[in-house]
View 1 (cartoon, rainbow, N blue to C red):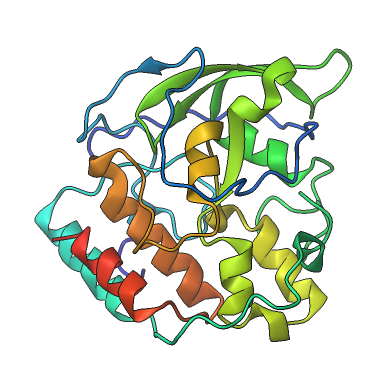
View 2 (spheres, rainbow, N blue to C red; view 1 turned 30 degrees about the vertical axis):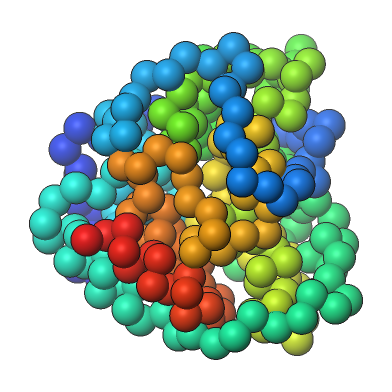
Length: 262
């Protein structure tokens, strides 16, 4: 990621919100495995396959602290994206034996060490809602607990008017799913390292709940965001997480990632 610095991406509109707190469905990171996509309840489709440039180019966001995910479109950025993906090692996917969500700590822990946004008094889920949401409202007396907001979903291009009463309409996606991490080497990690990847903002995106549920624990060879214009950015983010945590991906997944940036 060196050389990108703090470049501004043309057309990127970055909206930062205030601090947030935990919701009632904190442990929804993947949901059921499937292939179908559903329309967002109450959502408005604001973007086609190419979409607009809301969010942040992942090449300009190596820590994951800036909002959302914007398309990669310039030739140079495409070259940089392919070069990044090329660095990711490959190996076969191991067994899922012993995997449990609890192996990565309790959901949305604020006490993970060595990652941005941790130890700030607000849980991870709502740190992410705060990072990516707009028009945020908090529970009375709280500076953490979000009760409503507007979210632009990079996976579908829809704008979601979200309320806590319908909490599952927005889920936090682990871009590199936790069970995938487990199968690719995290089963041998310390508890602290697994807690890091589970709560690292680089690996987390608030998105349409039904779309996230369709992903399950799939890698890029079997699941990609339905919005085609964001798929290269998604592949880059997957690669960024893999490289940060020294995790391989399958050969098929790496090929699928590279294909999105051609």
